[in-house]
Amino acid sequence: MSQEELRQQNIQLVIEKALECFLEQGIEKTSVGEIARRAGLTERSLFRYFKKKTDIVLAAAYLYWNRVIAKMEAHLPENGEPRTGLEDVGMLLMAYSHLFLEDPNGIRFTLDAELVLDAAGKNRQIKNRPPEPYESSNGPVARAIRKGLADGSISPDVDVRELYYNSYDAILGLMQRLSIGGTPSAGELDYHSRMKRLCAMFVDAFRG
Image (cartoon, rainbow, N blue to C red):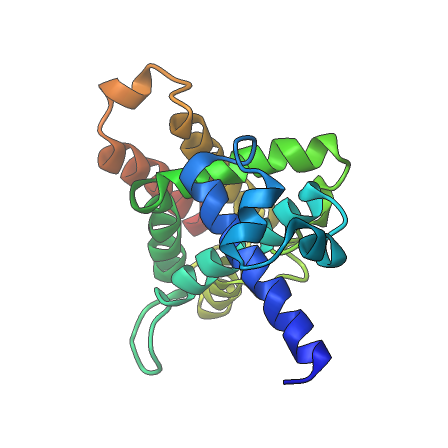
């Protein structure tokens, strides 16, 4: 293995172990030394790859959202499966909303990472997190919207750009708030029913 290959391997290992730590115990309680130990490195060696802890948080956020996008991609239909773009949008939004049930620690991590990176002036550097800029996004929801416009299941009269952002932000915002117990409704309303109705509202809006 070349030096460059070893370097890239160690960088990836640090990112994976950092995300593992952040999900288990949160960003604040995770030390750089612990991340280094889990990666089989010294703390000094780790700092050859990342100058600051916030740089590790940024890289871990990229990794987390890459995994989320891969999960959502799996909900897109196989070739030949007869589903409209609007149906794809509904399926994808519901899959997105299930993240809170599947990985509550991950949703909490997204909120913590946003706060940490915002304080460091790096929040805008997470380019791959939903929602990516609609015009340039090749993400699953943006592709489903374009499919729906092409097949007529999404109305050309609605502001798809606004709905794209609002649907992502509303679902993620609710999941993040619930992840910290920030609302009495967390214990009073059924999560499945709540998200199903929220996603249905956006599907109806896309339909026009």
